[in-house]
Picture (cartoon, rainbow, N blue to C red):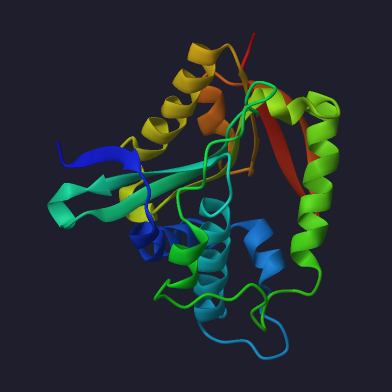
Length: 222
């Protein structure tokens, strides 16, 4: 089978970065975070967006309690077709969260370019986005409710692989994990992604707005 699912490693991050930038090229939130600005480029500062996404992807993989999954194309030398990054439910009291997939030493030795604050990133945009997301999490899950869910922070499928079931593979993996553990799921979907999550059997939990764009929250029906 040319496409298969596995856990991501440090070496996958450049491919994940390209897939992610391609996936969100025309996304309203992404455009708001990386506007054309006073010094536009024909590719809307693609280099900055690649460096920022590489930093963000590695930052998550270097934290405990996160898991990153990729779907790779064996017919194209393991090209990344899509990826998902989840936070796991909190471990039982007295237990430590699972260790990060990437150690501090590995992260420090990463050979690819990355930038937490590239010049074309709108000032304060990331903090503003996460603040709005936190308000929505508390509304849907209740304060502290995040500890009992598998939280899909990002799902990205390269447009070259859309329609081949990549997103379904990645999300179904998380649904199966949640059901096996008796846990919930939480995610926020873009307008483009909303129909997909409905088809996956997730429940619409209401919407919130960020920069004029509606984001829809989804949970696992109980």
